[in-house]
Amino acid sequence: MKLYRIFLIFLCTVLWIQISLAKTDPEIKALEERISKLEGYKIDITTQADARAETLKNQVEKDIRDGLKEIEDSKETLDLLVKLGIPLTIGGFILGSIGVFFYIKKLVTTRIASIIEKKRDDIVRLVETETFDNKLRNNKKILVISANEEGSERIGTFLRKLKFKYVLCWVFRSNDASDFGQTVPLKRSYNYIKKL
Image (tube, rainbow, N blue to C red; front, side):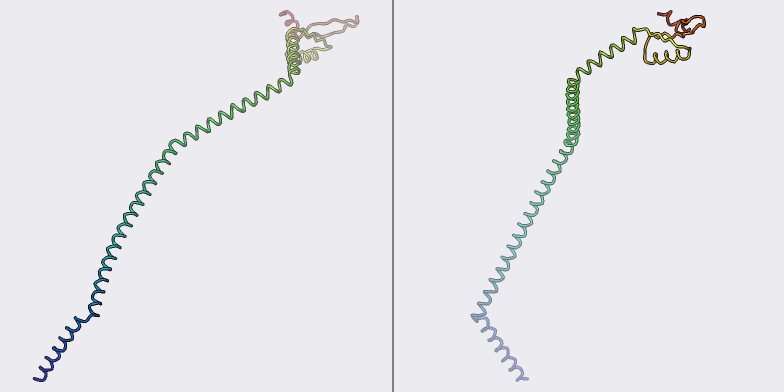
């Protein structure tokens, strides 16, 4: 066992020397410095990433707020257009219809005036003829003489339908003794003559 102890002490000593020499090695120190720098870079990168993420988050929130504000402004504008636009559109259609009506009225009036101007002589002649016809119907007395009562009545009815006021219906009855015969007024015609 003594040997075993000595061997154990020897191993511990070698190990201790090895560890102490390893700590003083310049390559290890250079590696440790590089590791500490990398850890510092890692911390810096993490900090910068967190700062960048926070900046991006703030920018996105700001963009969202701006977008929502634009949407609300657009909604208000559309609401205003709907509230004002529909009545104004209906009013525009009404005013347009009225304008078209007056334009067509003016166009028709102008057209009628030009036609009347072109046909003035015919219209004057027509009015004079109508005046003459009215005087004839209202003032002239028409005597209807026929061979039988039925024919006389038929002609008288026809003339009354033509709006002649004074129509007298007589029947001519011939006498065998004379060539002239006699004219006898019908009862209706006779009563009508009395009124005159």
